[in-house]
Length: 326
Image 1 (tube, rainbow, N blue to C red):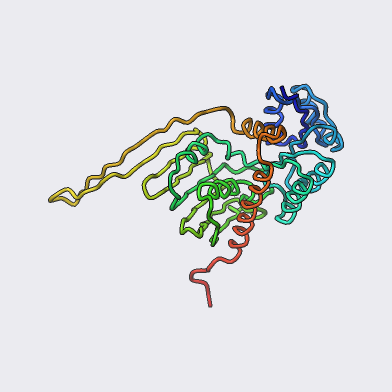
Image 2: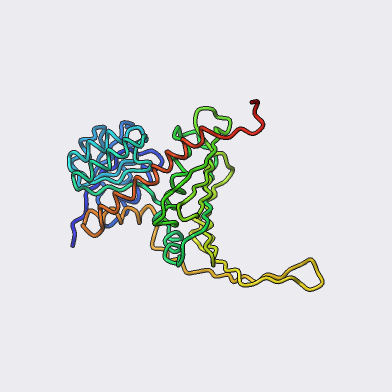
């Protein structure tokens, strides 16, 4: 039996506290230490989960591996330091504050042959994995909505905070095809300091489109995907973790009337719920540590969504102004 892994958690903000919980609950790990400079915040959590805490990231280097959930601007320095000390990492998304920093982290992990994961937790949503297993033909169109109520805590653009999840999943639904074009618009929703709303259309070299929308200016959480192929529509609720499949069978004009009759088959496939996606993500990370996964495939799957997210931000700076003075 593989020995329990001693994990360090670096950062205990909103996501860090969730990581602490799933690490502490796993029967494959011991949460050895939490690293965070805020004593008042970290001490009660460390006591609750029964681990040590420290302000010094060197404490994480003494563990088998680490989860980094600090503010994004700290990711690169912390990740590169821990990788240089031989520690496999699970880093919350985005991997780093810039594309070049993200590439540097990935290159370091590759050079040192160390497992590296990025926190694309929706990859482990059972509704998503169910649809990926059901797809029998290339999608023609993907629609992704990720809307949330406004929160004062985020200073990160909604593109890299929320939309990057939709981008990552669109790349998985429309796998094997590159993104050929990006159109995007953004809004600060009246806040001024940071992008709160972003809509984009990705054009793939197969001709498929992905229409993606992320917002932190909503009134409730919305996590919905529509994946359309030539023969089926997959409707995915990521919050309820369920899937409905629609297949249009026939339609005909009603004789002597402006009405028509349509026939659609509706199927609700079984979704196997194996646990919370965040816990499943941790399990996959532990599998990589145990040599039960392909660390090269995992590393290579990190940067593409970051690259497209960067193109979305670039595209949003050059809109076509309608009715503007010439």
